[in-house]
Length: 312
Image 1 (cartoon, rainbow, N blue to C red):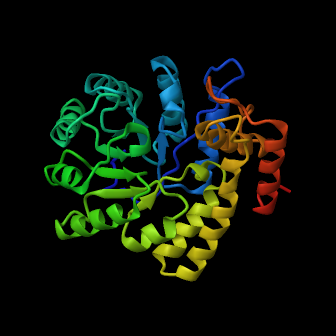
Image 2 (image 1 turned 180 degrees about the vertical axis):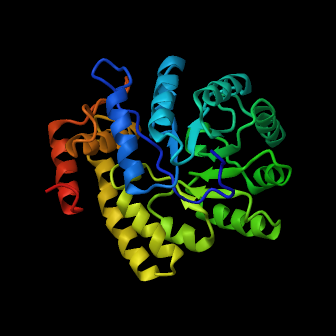
């Protein structure tokens, strides 16, 4: 399909349902994909943080992406995460994603090794040189320990290396400054800025982002679609009210006992438990060595779904 420029709207980062033995549950993943498509999302992001890409080897990554691309069947663009430590490995993932039929590539800065901004820029240029697909930079310093600054990102956008940015930095000030500088550089109509800060979408849309990539959108895509529609229509009071409702629902990512599990286990476990309770996926299992939610946490998730009007 022709990739929209700029990409706008609600683009959920798909969870990757797993079987109890750790294999990709293709039936459940196809069901989740159809649910999001039927809700009216504007795109899909496979193999991101919510998709547990960091836990998956090459074969399950390919299986997951093929399932999403096949199920989407061209209805919306599919962005594929090509997340790995080195430029060479990212290029391999990008080539595999293109062969699977993805419409765009999403990549972080290199990680584990310490890199200079000049090296980060070269990393993205080398990825783009190895693929014909649009390339999105993924700013997630909590995971890769490198902040993608405007001074790195915008020149890459001007030269055509980057088609967009997924900002999950949580740095609202830096994002706002990047948006201002992007407009001043004439990039607003050809460089997509998507926020991954799902609890501040109303404010980010007001600041000028093109769309949102919400992990919670797996659970409540309709809520984010309403929020986006309200913001685009200038109904800011309604947008704020919808955002507040989603903030309350987001507590399902904190349902787990922090003395027993890490933030990734709790967050992804909350999403998957919610999808399991909603009957979308067959199992709430997360990839090893993440800790599953206990029965008390599952009940907390159930009550939050009921409170949000998603589960009767």
